[in-house]
Image (cartoon, rainbow, N blue to C red):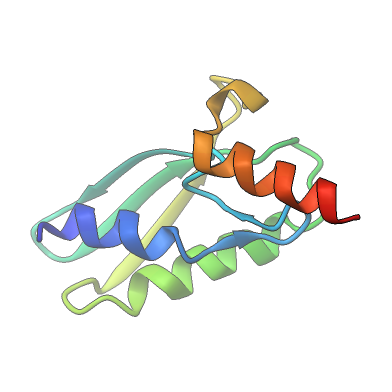
Length: 104
């Protein structure tokens, strides 16, 4: 498995605490690059720029990525273009959100 694939897989374990769905399925992660020195550069966004849990999410991303063997550092760049919208979510995220709403 390439290092980028390992990073994508690790980020599937990072949950947006307000929505309860992982950040990959939500479409928050735009790009991942890992250089030869094991430094991972992650470009991502949040559902809203004013997200009160932004620091927690970024911290969780860094922890998940640096736990991967061969990854020495994780740099997270929060970007606001393209703007996130629910259209970026995959079907798994939509289904998970629907199932949570039907429970409440």
